Length: 259
Image (cartoon, rainbow, N blue to C red; front, side, top):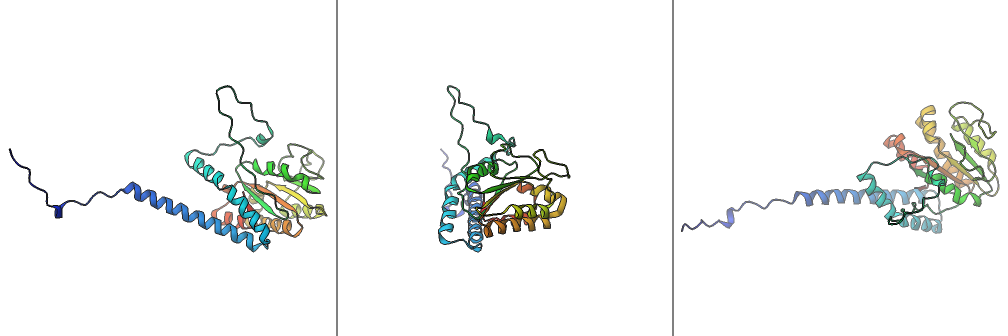
């Protein structure tokens, strides 16, 4: 019987590197670093707007409570493209589950209401923004609805609302047409009074198309400052994909609560 030659341990080929593990570690580290940067930037934004220590604690606790939800949404967005939902789908009650089927997942958690704050809901279709407005409307003395569509529920807001349309056509509810950012800002100032005003707006993409990014971003910055100065609330729904990366960062800095 022929004996196999012994292998010299000093001349053995190096073991293959687990390239999959290395790729996983690099991707994990990159995501971890990006998460830290976003969290610290958001905290700096809140601190720069003059919030008290109590308000900062409430904001941070609210953000921490949404971390599992944000992670799950991010995971789903990476696995599947986002589905477009109907504008007023949040108004329809969920269908009762049939026998043998699991109950529908609970809707995403809304942010904590903080008087004098501005909220930016980053969503392709207005859904969570209007839902949030419905939950806090009763805590304000009046409301202004700035949208290309009328409120789905005429009794949603206390007081009056303003409908903004691309062209100067009378709106169905009797209000005068809106126009550009300057006219909208003037109408908001006219409606501001004691007790706090609630403003909902989902026309930034329209402003961006008709008036350019600089005017639109200046209006967003003004709106965030107006909410703080008047102890009022601004709620904005916007598709972040409509803005460039640089303009998107500037837009987010105009609001002290991102959702």
